Every structure is written in C-alpha cells, then in structure tokens.
Image (tube, rainbow, N blue to C red):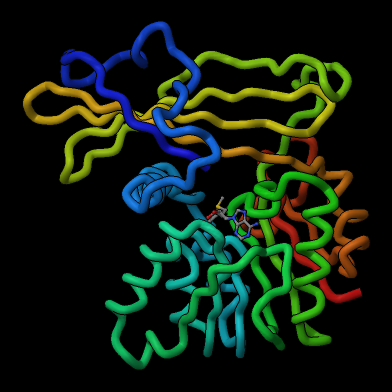
Length: 296
Ligand SMILES: C[S@@+](CC[C@H](N)C(=O)[O-])C[C@H]1O[C@@H](n2cnc3c(N)ncnc32)[C@H](O)[C@@H]1O
C-alpha cells in the first residue's frame, strides 16, 4: 500500500474528471527500497481511512455474530472501524494489523476510550499469516476483503491455518469479500500483460481539510486472480488549490467455488456461504460472499 503526493495547477473546486490524462500513480520521489518516512506512513493511513469506509450493514453483522463472545480476533483490523464497535458487544477483542500508520491511528482511538473499555481492546502489529496472538478466541473475523489482501493462495491458507490454531473447538470464523464475475475476467495466462481500465470518480467526501474527490482505476492481471486498485484522491481547498494523493491496494481474489477448498486446506469446514448480511442465499447475481466456518 503506497501513497504519493503531487501538486497540480489550480482548477475549479469540484473536478468533473481526474487530472487528464488520467495517469497511473507517478513514481515516488524516494527510491522504492527506501523505507517510507514516518510522515508518509501517517499520510497513507489517513488516505486509507478516507477510502475504506466499509459496507452498509457490515457493522451490524459483525456485532451480531460476535455478541456475547469471550474473545474476538480481527485479522487486518485497519484503523478499528469494526474492532471498536465489536468491543462494545464482546468481553475482549484483539486486532492484528501490519500497517504502522493504521496501528497508530487505532492506538490513539483506544487511548481515547473510557479506561474500562480500553482495557478490553488490544492491537498487535503482526502479520495475519501468523503466528497470531495467543488464543483461545471464540470468534475470528476477517472483514471487508481482508483475506484478498494476501498475495497468494498459499498465504491465504497460511492465514486460515494460523486462525485455526488459536480458535476454541466450538469457535467460529466469519469473513466477507466481493464476488468477481468470472465472465468479466480477461482471458490469458499468468504473465500476460495487465489490463487497466480508466480512472472513474467513485466518491466525494467533505472533511475539515476540504473536499476529497476519489477516483479509482483497476488493473487486472490475466490468469493470476490479481486485481490492483489505484486511487487518486484530489483534495480541493477553499482557495481553489488542489493536492493529489495516490494510493494503491493489491488484491488476490478468490472465486466462490474456491472458498470451500481453501477453507478446508486451512483446517475449516464451511458452514454457510450467504450473498448478503442478512443471510440471503448466495447465487449467480450475488455481489458479496459472507462466509461462516467452524473448525474441521
Ligand atoms: C480491506 S482492509 C479491512 C480493514 C478492516 N477489517 C475493516 O473492515 O475496515 C484489510 C486490512 O488488512 C491489512 N493487512 C493486509 N495484509 C496484512 C497482513 N499480512 N497482516 C495483517 N494485516 C494485513 C491492511 O493493512 C488493511 O488494514
């Protein structure tokens, strides 16, 4: 995940289209192998939070399935969008997250909680492929496409196996992810040239800093089950100036038919595959997979 900043000339306050021609994120001014500065890491987390706002209905769902749990583990907890609401309904919650800027934002939120609640929330800067914080946990959750953030099937299985190792015998795993329409995929073998679509305006956010217009471009890697999302975030300030940030996320998606075997390889048995937050039957037109599994 990366963020870079460029200044563009002054333009009208609400751009109708991204700066033209819509370019892929430009090379950073720092060499790739240089560690990002603390400021760049913080800015990346801030942009991340602006873009990752979750699904309508997911908070209710995860609170419902975690209500009354003794210990909940969230893998890839980000800035605590769900971890903190889950902490209101479970006795103890632990989040795992690798991004230092997101961990910092979450730690600040935990520190601002009433002491009684803060004592029941923890975040570990760790990799969800394991080893994970010591169990047992009676719920493990990987919300909002978290499993797709791992770059290969082997990594996804390693994560599921690590989760299996810290769950109670009657514990449950829940995760959700978007569904890719197989027919929309570009045919081709691994190694074929990636296919990029145009940047599209996807969201406007009004914040104290000004108006953010967010544009997204997807780049598909044929045969690799990989789609990268590139975001350009245009901040328009009161004087009509603009700052453009770039942010990228790489996803290795799973098809619905792969969920059961991948779970099995990680030591889990699929108990439910729904097409929505209220248990709607999963079907050909479902845009979402909501998965529940138990230890095999
Ligand atoms: C799509 S976000 C979901 C965030 C959060 N669960 C939510 O629902 O808002 C996935 C998160 O997983 C984190 N992540 C990616 N790879 C990871 C890894 N190997 N170990 C731990 N966290 C990881 C990312 O930094 C990001 O915060």
